[in-house]
Amino acid sequence: MVYLSPAPLYHAAPLVFCYGVQRLGGTAVAMEHFEPASALQLIERYRVTHSQWVPTMFIRMLKLSERERIRYDLSSHRVAVHAAAPCPVHVKAAMIEWWGPILFEYYAATEGVGSTFVTSEEWLKKPGTVGRCVTGRIHIVDDDGRELQPGEEGIVYFEAAAVRPFEYHNDPEKTAEARLGDWWTTGDVGYVDEDGYLFLTDRKANMIISGGVNIYPREIEDALIQHPAVADVAVFGVPNEDFGEEVKAVVEPADGVTGSPELEQELIDFCRERIARFKCPRSIDFEPQLPRLPTGKLYKRILKERYWADAGRT
Image 1 (cartoon, helix red, strand yellow):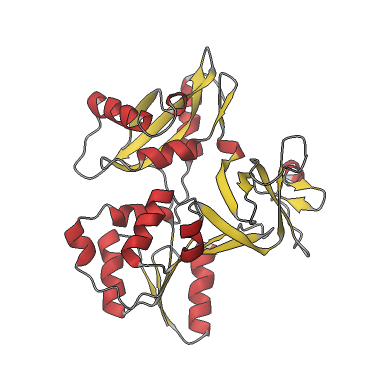
Image 2: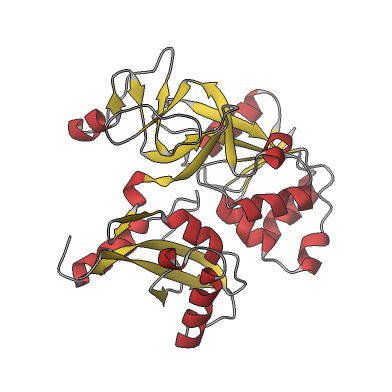
């Protein structure tokens, strides 16, 4: 077993995987910094068999030229695990088409309240799912604490047989908000289908309320990231005098692309062709690089707070 860790070891999952591989007698190959072509080159060079990724890495590898993508021998690669952030459906479908059905996804959290798992074969039958329960039992609950039926969207709670007690450091209020009796949540929103497969919509904290309508950024981000001029994107709500909030997108342009009013309108039109018009950004700004950790986590709060502070609101 040869395991490639393209993510830094200060994050829990890469550290645990590298430790486990070496404990079992395997070889761990750790990248100092993720770079798409270098990751592929390492798979070929070390005959990597297993790996773990975040969706941002998939997106950046898929934006390599066809020549760069096919020049490396990836035949040794048998298992590619991914987690940490939602993966757009079109991105995962493209990765399975490229690498074959070797993608395995899990959904979990540091709080340890529960987890799900899905294979490529299962996912192809139910695109977008993060799988069925491995630990804990899923409950979908509305804002009033009422449990919802299959197909109904609400807050995702896990009921585990033996949840390890936890609390947020120096934040008893947040700890209390995460608990509903013996059920726990990390704030994700989604639904469960009739077969028990979980589908995530977004995080409740990310929801934009514009004119009384709930809008989730993930659908918008998944649409915009498909444009070849977009390397990364963050969508959030900014102040609007009439509607309370409006949809704002901040885009990191792809290499060689410069943000401009013309590109802004092109991206807005591109978005309107794919999702409902009321969900699309009213405006788009451009940044050289979005504040995203190597683990794939986006510090959206840093961007959002800037706009609310500029408007004299917090």
